[in-house]
Image (cartoon, rainbow, N blue to C red; front, side):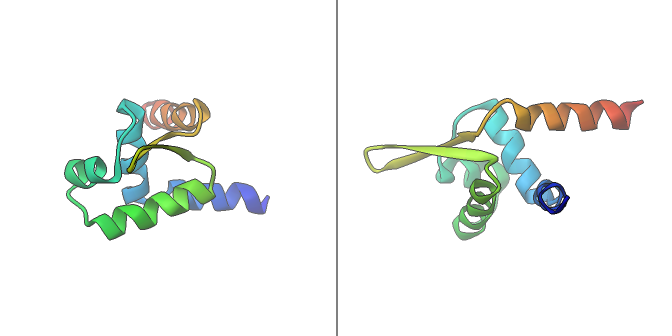
Length: 88
């Protein structure tokens, strides 16, 4: 049960939800997320670290660049189901 509540805690943060939604659209660098959301780099990096720990995002390196993406399709399935529930 603790893992479930921890996951909902991570998903319940508005900034992290916005980051996940942005990553649903495409794979992004920290710089890209900063530009899209208008947040500081340190804030985005901190939130990405929490999302990685929760296994909601993954990353890959290409040279000096680090690209982030959703860990799997389950993340967006959760969002879609919540939206459907709200709209009922």
